[in-house]
Amino acid sequence: MSIRKADVSSLNRIAARAGLVAVIVLSSACSVLPRPEPVDTYLLPGAPASRMAAQGQGEPTLPVSLRVSRPVAGTQLSGQRILVVPDANRVSVYKGANWSEPVPVLLRDRIVEAFRSDGRIAALSSDEQRLQADYEIASELLAFHSEYRDGAPEVVVRLDARLVQRDGRRIVASRLFEARQRPAGVAVPQVVAGFGEASTTVADALVGWAAGEIARCLPKACAD
Image 1 (cartoon, rainbow, N blue to C red):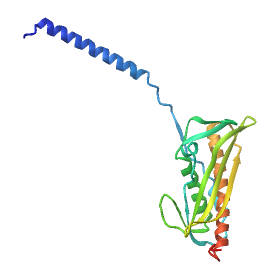
Image 2 (cartoon, rainbow, N blue to C red; image 1 turned 60 degrees about the vertical axis):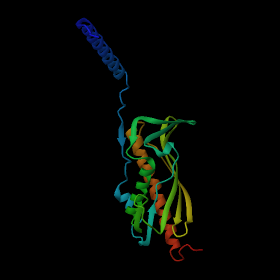
Image 3 (cartoon, rainbow, N blue to C red; image 1 turned 135 degrees about the vertical axis):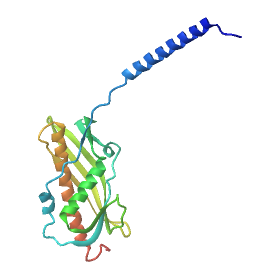
Image 4 (tube, rainbow, N blue to C red; image 1 turned 30 degrees about the vertical axis):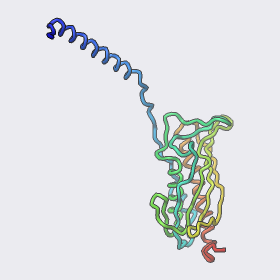
């Protein structure tokens, strides 16, 4: 069976039209895809080194090793979004703003930094290195958000911490830490600065508490 030239030309025209229609459809589909939202990524602001070092100044070094583990956290607190509670029963996020790391990592690193600046613990590590240690800071992150009070934001950081003796996994002591900080304004960078202040307040308080508990344990190794 032979195909005439006219038939071939018709087939070519149909194929060309079909291809043109496909290109138009694909172009239209691409044009309606939403553009990605620009996102600003924020580091957790730190405290001046002089403030963080002042607490343990003049205190003897404790001949122990300590590991700081990442806080356990729920779904909302485990991510990188900056949380805000605009009213009593609603949790939202600051649009176009993220933390540089998941929140538990940011707070763990802030606590490690506070211990390092304090200087009372002889050997310090985090769960990232998976090193053996005499003691461990285990914790649960309960709040890391801003909430509106009287029309103004207030940053809340709340951490339930436990000092654990690694030999036997014995809880030596536990304590709830909370800090509230009023940012200078409602803009995201100002709120982020408030998170930095509140996180440092919690970290400093935890360091003072843990170092005191370890010093108390040393003569009897907390065996009682």
